[in-house]
Length: 194
Image 1 (cartoon, one colour):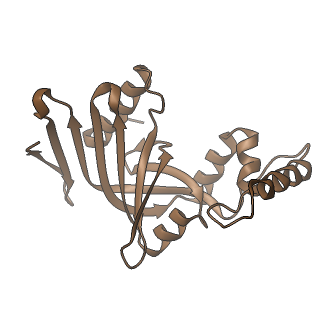
Image 2: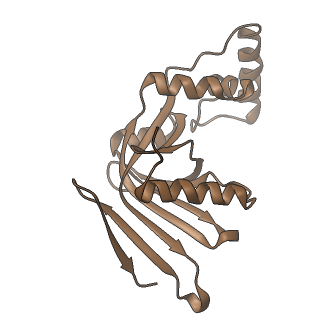
Image 3: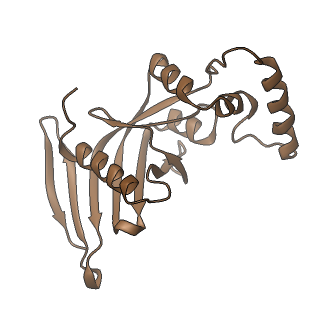
C-alpha cells in the first residue's frame, strides 16, 4: 500500500511522533457525538487506525455513542498531546466498518477484552459493578477452551473527515493553526489566526 499522504498522512505521522515521544496515550482522542435533537456528549476513545478513508475506532453499537452515531452520523474528534504542544481537530461523517474488518480487529484484541465485550451491557444502568463481574465469570466459563467470537452488537466505526485542523503551540499564544477542508476534488488548506 502506498504511503498515506495529505492531512490524514500528517495525522498518522503526528500519532507516531506522540508514540515515539512517550506520550501516555498517543492514540487517545475525544469523540464528540450528538443526539438526534442536538444534545452533545463527549468521551475518550482510542484511535485504532488511520487510512485513506479516515479514522477508525471500535465500540459496542448499543452504547450511548453507538446509538447517537446511528441517530446522527456526524462526529468530531480531538487528539491532544500536551508534551508535544500539538492538537488535531477532526469533523466528519461516520459509518460502520464492515463485519470482516470488525472481526479482524476483534480477534487481535487480548482475550480478556474480547470476553468483556460479551459481559458488559455498555452504557446501560446496572445496580453495581458486581453485575458485570458475575457476567464476566459466566462468559469466561462459557468460552473456556474456545475462541471468543465478536458479539453481533460490537464493531467498528469510520470517521470520514470533512475538515481537519492541526494546532501547534507557539510562544506568547501565537499558535499555528492549519485547517484542511475536503472538497470533491482535493483538500484545501487555510491558515487560521490563533
